[in-house]
Image 1 (cartoon, rainbow, N blue to C red):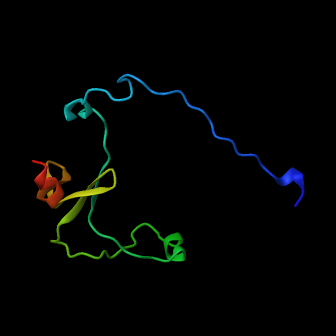
Image 2: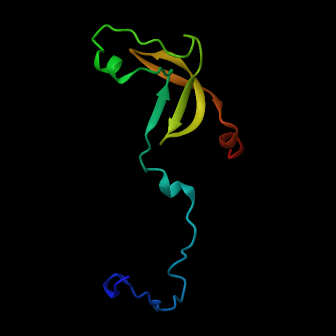
Image 3: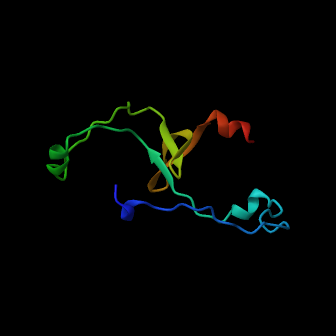
Length: 108
């Protein structure tokens, strides 16, 4: 092994952290109230090959893994939080929350 492949490793010296600047007073959760969150409602899933996906055309039907009267899954930022029922609200569809996940239920 030649000398040019060797590396010298030395410890670094960091200054000591003093005071309370690193730990602030906890704030109530309400300060996060205006932070946007992505809510996704999933009615079902299916598996397809990539060639089948590439061949999709307008009017094609994708069968899903649930019955029409099954509940839908509700996710917030990718985390499952509840189940719900699809309803019609005015001229659009909506979801009525029917069951919160047990973890969410214990937070209330």
